[in-house]
Image (cartoon, rainbow, N blue to C red; front, top):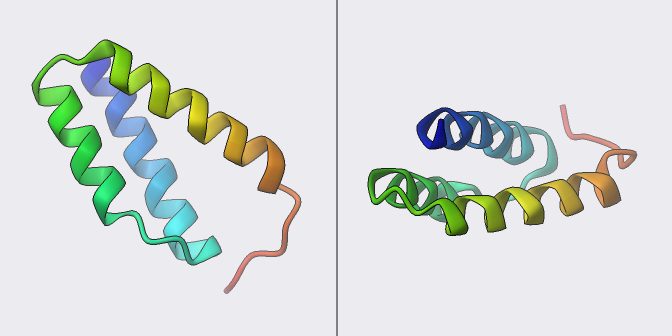
Length: 64
């Protein structure tokens, strides 16, 4: 379950990088490490942070 959640968040990070110009390399690497170490707390904390970011920024213009 944690691996799947981390994979979905990686897709989100790549989307955010492509369309919002926010570098995702460090976060993607961190998610990989959290998943590899089965660190559920860290993954859930990242998920909460990404949900908050999305709630604030989903209406902003994207770069094409």
